[in-house]
Image (cartoon, rainbow, N blue to C red; front, top):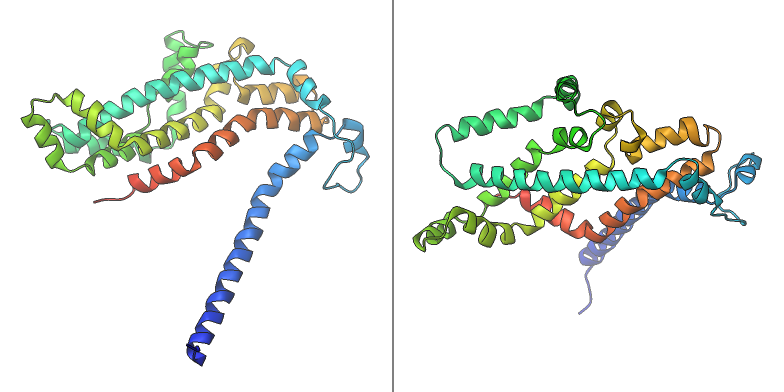
Length: 287
């Protein structure tokens, strides 16, 4: 069948609209990804070649890995990465335990004042994190936990937002499943681990990955609570490299250090990006 003029016009408009959308998204992707490309490119340029470029070049004909060698020898960047890994894993594990049990309590258990407690709990999200830094600092100092992993971990071991996100996810599971489990004499803990956690696994994976990224990028608190290089994280390490390592002029070596620190998070996000999007979408959908 031949298309009439209206159908042909509609198809042309649809095609033009899609082309414009794809062109805009492609341009936007290039703008977003260009800083990462420039960072990686600069990290493979030698210090002399970089300084000799009066007009920055978008490629290099003589790449070098010397900047990466310098990044791990000028300062103990490997130690900083290991410290960050320990901090991230322990903090995330504690956060998961606290978040799962708190979300389950708010979503399924009945206790006096639950709604009031939850509202007060959510009100903490209205308080900027910067306002509690002084209180946390005084508390950690009084407990003599400065320059310790415990001092780094404790203030970051919970998150109101993650508890809220998982609570809403738990609440989406039909009540009939819970009542049926109670009829079968299933304990609350068994119901949590056998039913809720498997069903809400995408959201749990999402908050786990987001917490890992948050810990890896943490700067203000580690910078404030540690002045012993044995407990420096990568965020401290970048500043240490800038001040006592290469100096502020060796940009290629700095970029090599930043790439080394950023690659684990980029790989993690690329591997689990679909689960992150699915978990966030699921947590924000009711019914």
